[in-house]
Amino acid sequence: MSYRNKTYVAFASEDIHNYRLMTAWRANKNIEFDFTNAHDIYEARDTSTPETIKRRLRERLNNTKQVVLLGSPAARRKGGDGSSFLAYEVGAIISLGLPVVVANLDGARRGKSGTNIPAPLTDEDYFAMSVSFGPTIIKYALNHYVPDFNNSDKTGPHNYNESVYESLGLNK
Image (tube, rainbow, N blue to C red):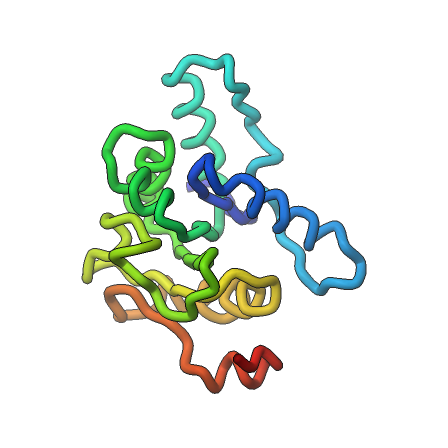
């Protein structure tokens, strides 16, 4: 497999404003948050055919080290519907065995599989990490969960204890 060095952000089209917020965090010199955005390569325009878009999505995912999925009711619905582009992305993510950090847009610190996470990622066989949506905890998860993903025997959805949030200054 080719060298993977990018972060892929998967999201339902309804949540694109949150994806744009993540890119704004990256650009803001006052926020310590950075990632190499896989969406910057293999651009697929809305006028492309579905087959071309899926091919471009797969090319992006093939060059990805990790995934941040923006968790929301729309992501749950579309990511598990079997026909949307997000469902295609989720299937490819699982087949490639990529680590997934689910950033819950509703601020939940625990995965709400019935609310925010597409059904294929709630399978007890797939190890995914669920966090709240914010630059500090997402960065922490990318730095700590992702390196352990390949060496882990854990299964199912996971989340961090409140003590991790507190150590990062993220008190409720």
